[in-house]
Length: 156
Image (cartoon, rainbow, N blue to C red):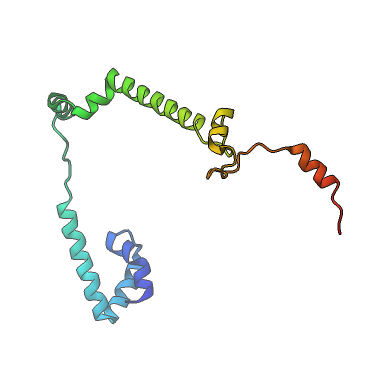
């Protein structure tokens, strides 16, 4: 189909084309039989679609009121009534408080980096000359002796 015809086809089929434009399109269609056939089919299709168009169809008076009454008569779902009740709001608030409490407890009971034991537990773990415990070296250290050894170190 000719580009000129394609560009002005909608105006031609709707009947809003000027007389000169209409004459030009018809001249070009008379020269191209396949394009004329396509345009004829489009015109028939357009008329068929116009015949299917419902004109002047309005709902009867009271239609919307009847629809609303029917919706109200059916009632609401169980989930809607559950979510709108005070019980659901209290349940959500209690769940939120429980989550906060559990989170606080988990944070406060998080194990630290160092193992802290009381003096009796340390003595029990070490014994008199027992091996170092598996969890780390918790034998008391004489920090002053280490400092003196480091300060008096002489290279040989």
